[in-house]
Image 1 (cartoon, rainbow, N blue to C red):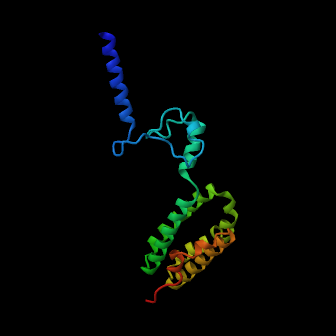
Image 2 (cartoon, rainbow, N blue to C red):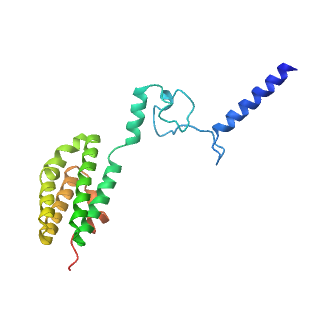
Image 3 (cartoon, one colour):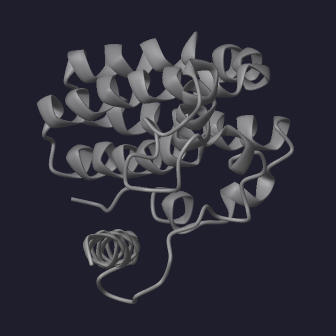
Length: 185
């Protein structure tokens, strides 16, 4: 009878453990995505919310962090957002806000270039080492017309860099259409 009791407890614990592994919303078993090659080999335990800790070793953890960090798409999205905020701050003549976003934009840009170092030469020559400082100086000067003109020149540098990087399709987007000119006051 005791062995039957132990068997019953073991079966119950197994069932509870199996149920705990299922998604409470869908009842699906957890698994790693098919779209990321090599994850199965790098996993010591079944997939769980501990996606980083369950990797076999630090090398695999760093690989997962690199996958998570991705390419430059998140940084470029943030750059586009902040770029639009700079444009809107110029319209409002809020030079402090424009400067705030401009400085943040630079740090985000640097992170993007860490991830895509082949883009660094064009980004620096066409934008960061030239137009960046010019626009910052214009903001500090506080002359509305100078700020607007420098921003539009900077915009052209962005467009030229996208062409140089063989990504001209980036220029045919609302962010560049909407910032092509400033409304008259």
